[in-house]
Length: 271
Ligand SMILES: Cc1cc2nc3c(=O)[nH]c(=O)nc-3n(C[C@H](O)[C@H](O)[C@H](O)COP(=O)(O)OP(=O)(O)OC[C@H]3O[C@@H](n4cnc5c(N)ncnc54)[C@H](O)[C@@H]3O)c2cc1C
Image (cartoon, rainbow, N blue to C red):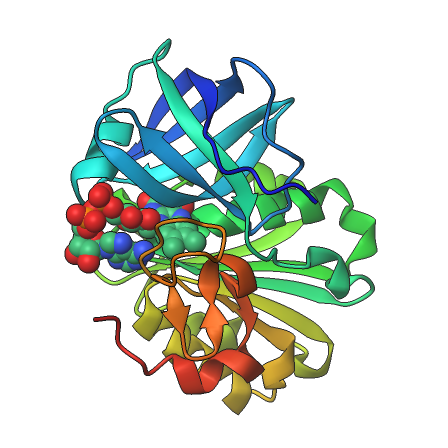
C-alpha cells in the first residue's frame, strides 16, 4: 500500500457551526481524492501557513470528507475559521478503524463524551445503513451542557433510523428536560447485554478510563471495548515517534485500540 505523505488539496464545500467552538466542514477534493477510509480513521488537515493537525473523519459525502473540528489552539482555530471556497491540505487516511462489522449479529454500543462523538459519527452512520446486521444500536452521549452537544440536529434522524439514543449533560440549562450527570450513569439505564455488546468509546481520556471500568463492572469483557487514544501527532506515518504510547505508535497502531491492550497505558500522561 502506498502511504500518502503529501497533502492533497481539498476545497471547503460547507461549514456548519456545531457549538460555539466547533464546526463541521464538508471537504471536496480539488485533484485526486485521498484513498478509501473507514470510521475511526483520521487525516492530517493542513491550514496552509499555520500548521497541520490530526482530525478524525466524521463522515463522507461522495468523494468528499466530513470533518468536525473543535477550536483549541492555533491550527484548529485556523481550520474552524475557513470559509467555503477556501482550500486546505489533507493527508491520509491514517490509523486503525472501529471495526464496526465485528458487532454483526450483536449489539453495537457507542459511548461518546463531547467532541468524542465526531470520530464515532461515521461508525453510527455505517451501522445505520446496515441496520439489520445488528441486534441493537445504542448511542450514549455525554456533553458538558446542552449547548455543547455536537450533531444535536442529527440525533432524531439516528433514532428514526433505528438507534437507541440516551443523552446526558453535566450542567443543565434552561429548558433542558433530559438526564443530568456523567455519561457512565447511562450504562446502567441502557440495559446492555454484556456478553453480546461491542462497545466503542471516545472522549477525554479520564472519561474513557471511567467508562471502560464501568463497562467491565457491568460484565463487558475488556476485549469487547475499544477506545480511541489521542497523543500529539506530527507525521501520521509512524516515522517521527511523537505519538508513542508505551509500545504503540498511535498514528499507526491506533487511534482505535482494544481496551484489553489500552488499559495499562491509559494512566500514562503525555509530556
Ligand atoms: C487521532 C486523532 C484524532 C483527532 N480527532 C479530532 C477531531 O475529530 N476533532 C477535533 O477537534 N480534534 C481532534 N483531535 C485533536 C486535535 O488534533 C488537537 O486539538 C489539535 O492537534 C490541537 O492543535 P492546535 O494547534 O489547534 O492547538 P495546540 O496549540 O497544539 O494545543 C491546544 C491545546 O490542545 C491540547 N492538545 C493538542 N493536541 C491534542 C491532542 N491530540 N489531544 C488532546 N489535546 C490536545 C494541547 O495540550 C493544548 O492544551 C484528534 C487528535 C488525534 C490524535
